[in-house]
Every structure is written in C-alpha cells, then in structure tokens.
Amino acid sequence: MQQKTEWLELESLLGGACATFDTLASYLQLGGKCKTCRHIVPIDRHALARRFGRDRPLAGLEPKLKCTACDRRGDSVFVVAKLPR
Ligand SMILES: [Zn+2]
Image 1 (cartoon, rainbow, N blue to C red):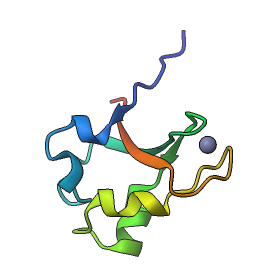
Image 2 (image 1 turned 90 degrees about the horizontal axis):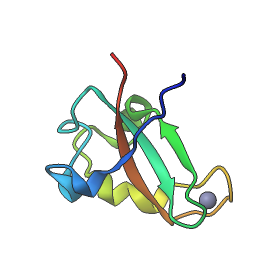
Image 3 (image 1 turned 120 degrees about the horizontal axis):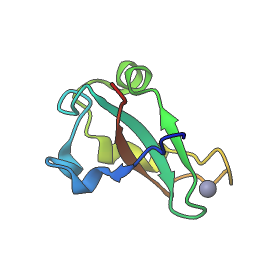
Image 4 (image 1 turned 45 degrees about the vertical axis):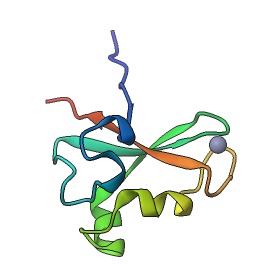
C-alpha cells in the first residue's frame, strides 16, 4: 500500500510566515500548493535557496510561485511534508 504524503501549510508550523530556508528544518520537503486548483507540487528547496538566498523569508516568495497544473501565478502558498526516513 502506498503511503500518501501529508502536506501541511507552512503557516501552521512554528515560525510560519517568517520562516526562511535556514530556519526550515532539513527533514521537511518543501512544496507549493495552488489555491485555485489545489494542485501540490514538490519544490527543490536547495535550488530556491541558492537562487534567492538562504535567509530570505519564504512568505515573500509566494507571489513568485506558479502552478504547474493551471499555470496561475501568485496564487500559491508554501506547504511542507515530512520526508520518509
Ligand atoms: Zn493551479
């Protein structure tokens, strides 16, 4: 049986809106969730950190997220999931 990934909205975590790549626990998988179509896509946090800086607040990057399912930009939020061990 395949285990379903459980995504949590970043805001529900400690640090929420002011979390940065640096303060985001390393065992968390970062993802983007589209508020329009509910599509969730995993995001390479290391690539983003290199591009925008490790101390950049994640909330400030949300307007840059683009949904890969419906092509809508700026209507996504960050979500996180615990990586399987
Ligand atoms: Zn979408």
